[in-house]
Image (tube, rainbow, N blue to C red; front, top):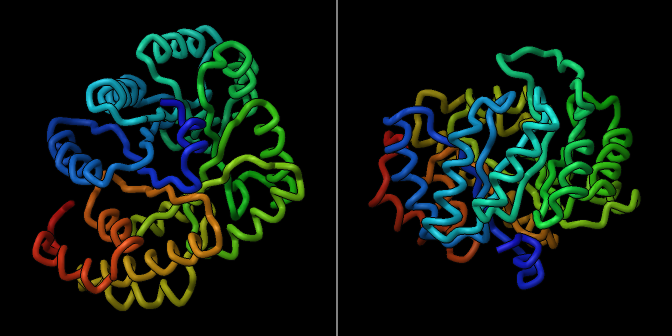
Length: 307
């Protein structure tokens, strides 16, 4: 199903993001965790695409599995860094032939941690270039794009980033999913500016429970997301206690998610990191009393489990 059709039927959507496993051990763990999450019947799922297209084959295989074998609406990420027009056209045909109807189009990150983005010889230097090409040549896709509530790290100001976002939406983006953030005020400010600029598509907030503080702090530094100082202090005091760390991160994410929904956010997109415990606790808290959820899952999970 096209995600646009899902939007027409649902005021709110709840979706999960996965990344393709790199080896057999990771594949087994992924299968366990993905299976648990898919029991929650998300509106759709997305599959990430490594820097410079490094997980190209695994991403396509994973999306094909979800979409055609498990019958879940799935959307692959796709980036244009280092990609030629010939390669992009070929990949779009492969996805279309595999009945993939949704795609998240991104500029992407340089491979191997290289901070420089080399100029694309075929002109695909920005996500808007990729969106325009796909929209004009493969209009059967519902196209998703990325948004940055605290501005893209390479943009000088939020207003500049909003102008770039408007250009991308005008090129053919149907909806947006935000980068993770931990202060909802950033999202609300961003929404106000986006609407004022004429960006009127659905913008779904992306959230990530902090269960591994050092890992998420590193992600936040790369993406430009700010972790509130009060939360940092709480988590730093609990670095030696995984259970307390988990509960602090989960409680914060639950409060953040409820506030977003109470203020009319059009759903939530969960960055799962291929783990199910926090996503399940958070997702279930949206419908049930949190105390009951904690009782339910304490019997199923140990704080030392890798899931």
